[in-house]
Length: 518
Image 1 (tube, rainbow, N blue to C red):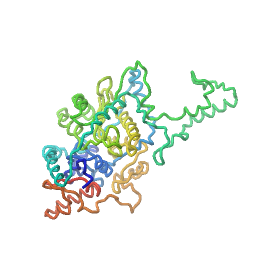
Image 2: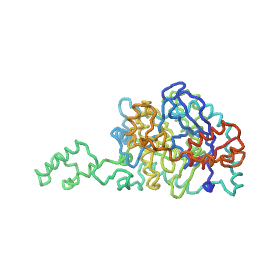
Image 3: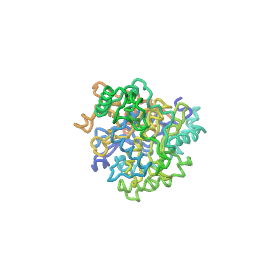
Image 4: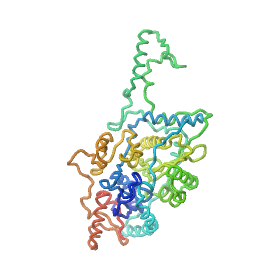
C-alpha cells in the first residue's frame, strides 16, 4: 500500500439504492434513483477518477444516478476550455458586465439567467434523511484515529504536512484574480500542441459580412493605390497600417473580453477571490457570515425555499464541508488541489459565490449562488465563463489540468440543457466511461432518454472490476483485502453490496479507497 505514503487514503461508506424517490427535475414522485456513499475523506485523484465514472458530490455525500432506471438520466458533461470560443450570447454577457462596471449601466427589461443546479433539492432529495443520519453517526475523528493506528502498525504514516507555501500561493492567486487583470502567464495565442485546441496562428473563421468588407477594402485599394481609403480609416490610425487590417479580424479571446481595461473613474470595482473551503482559513472564516446570508437570500428568491430550510447547518453541510483532502504538490497549480469558494466582490460586498473543486485534470463546478438583486448581470453565465478562463490559467502551470466539468447534463429537462451551449464539450458514456463529443450524442438523446454514446458495440469499461478480492476494506481498525474479509462474512447481501460498489467505482479506486464496514 505504498500509494498511501505521505497522505491519508479515501475512506467511504457505501449505501446501495433501495428505493425510488422524488425527482427534483421532472417532479416525478417516484422517478429518481441513485447509489451513494458517504466520504469520510477522499483524495483529489480518487474523486477525479470517480467523476470520470459518473459520480458527483454534494457536501460529503457522493452519488451516482442509476442511469438506465432513473426518470431523468444525468450525464456528466465537460467543456474543453483550450478550444473554447465564447458565443455571441456569451460576449453579450461579458460586455454587459463591462458596461456596468465602467458606467454603472443597467440593462433595460428582464434578463433571464441560466438556472443553476440546486443542492439538496434536485440532486439528492431522496437521500436527505440518510445524509442527516450519516452526518450524525459518521465520526471522522474516530475513524481517522483507528486508521492512523492501523497504518502505523504497518509502518506507514498517514499524517499530511501543511506546506507553508499554501497561504502564499493562495494570496498570489487571489491577487491575480482580484486585480481584474489576467495572469501574465496566460498565453492564449500560442500554437497549441496537436490535439490541444485550435491553432490561432492560422486565419480564423470569419463572418460573411467581414469577408465582404475586406473585399470592398481591397477593391478600393486597387482603385486608389495612394492609400486614401475613405470610409475605412480608423480615427487616429495612419493609412499605412491598413495592409495589416486582417489582423484586427482576429477574434478576441475570452481573456480579452473578461479583462478589458476599465477607465480610472469606473463606476464599480469587481474582484474575484479564491478562498479554500476551510474554517482554518482566515479569509474563509471572516467572510462566512456574509456568504451565508447571500446563500439564504438566493435560495429563498430563486428556488423558493422556506427560510427555515436554509439554516447554517444545511449551508455548512452542503457547501462548506468537503471530503477532499487539500494537496499542494510541486507540479500542481499554485493554489493547490481541493475545494474552494470563488467569491465575487462588488464594491466590497459579495454578490456571488462559485463553489468549485480543483482536481488533477479539471476544475469541477459544484454550485453557484448569487444576489438576486444583480440578476440583470446574468451571473450564472458570467461565472461559468470566468471559471473556464480560470481553468485555462491553471493549465499554464499544470498542463494536464485542461477540462472544466459542469456537473450533469439532463437532455430531458429543458432548464438544464443550457450546459450544452459551452462548446466544445463532451458527454460521458454511461456504460464504457469514454468521452464523446456532444454533437454526436444529441441525435440519440432526441430518440431516447437513456443512451450508450460509445458506438463500438465491442467496447467495454476498461476499468471494470475484474479482481474484487483486491478491493480494500477497513474493518475493526484493520485494513484488509476483500478476499480476506469475505471469509468471515456469512450475509449474502453483504457480498452483493460490496461487488456492486466495486463495479461502480472501478478497479483502480476499489484498490486505493478504503471501504468502511462496521
